[in-house]
Image: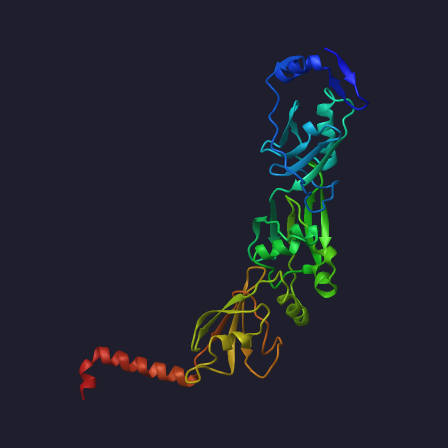
Amino acid sequence: MNILSTGHYQRWSISAVPLVLGLVVSGGGVLASPVTPEPEHQAVAPAAAVDTETYLLGPGDRVLVDIFDVPEHSGERQVLIDGSVNLNWVGGVAVQGLTLPQAAGAIAAAYNRYLYDPLVTVTLTSPRPLRVSVAGAVNRPGSYVVSFTEAPGSDPDARWPTVTQALQQAGGITQFANVRQVQVERQQSVDTASTLNLDLWALLQTGDLSQDIALRDGDSIWVPATTAIAPAEARSLASASFSPAVIQVNVVGEVPRPGTVEVPPNMPLNQALLAAGGFDNSRAQTGSVQLVRLNLDGSVSQREVAVDFTQGINEDTNPILYTNDVIIVNRSGTAQFSDSFNGVLETIGKIFPFFFLF
């Protein structure tokens, strides 16, 4: 069989074509007929711009494999569940955990036995769904699959989900979140990882989009907690897109609608009282209420708060509420006396039922 050199790859003479089409020789053995190529997609557009030096391929990614001047072996391929791409002549080539340049090198090495110095380019056309973890001061910590957005005509980078979108899926930050020191741990290779430090407060105050980075598969987001937040900062965080829309607090006792009420984050005590219908003026002690709170360290605190509906947010008479706070509206002295007296009469009526006949 004659081999003809054409500058950058080898060709077989026409007389050898029937043999080549019927058999593939690999490592001295005879294999089955060539792999059937996947249907080629015309005008395949690359995915949103990615950092080719850091993006690691994995099952579910679709890539465009381009072997220069060899279109019959080029085309779009999907990374299979075993982490390989299936290619003509060479079969499966493992690419999981490789960057795009590394994958191109692995494919070129696989073709070296058939092509002379092949020039291979690998482009990501459709990234796999991203699974990330969110932990710390968020309302629903856990593992999430974050979706890509389809926004034709917009900046292609907008397709990639960001840190704040993942925080939204995790129920938003808690009111004790320290958004100045958010961390993202990212795998740079199979054996190495790096930690990215983000300041989401700068995103809110100055619009610094570099703090809301695009996510990659396997990222771990950590939101630390803080012990105290200034009221002005708390109000700004309450309106952020990565804060929950509402929080739940409980109002019990002498109000028209006792139970769980929903209020916007970082709203004050007076707001929750009004959401429950205000005081029951015929029975409530209107001068003060009891505020019960579960603290970050697991302890429970209770304090008396003087109520003044004319006051703005302040820690003494109108403190900011946190999720699952409990407001207890006690009975007034008159209501306590009336309830006690009625209880006595009810007891007497059970013992001496004839007493009420006269």
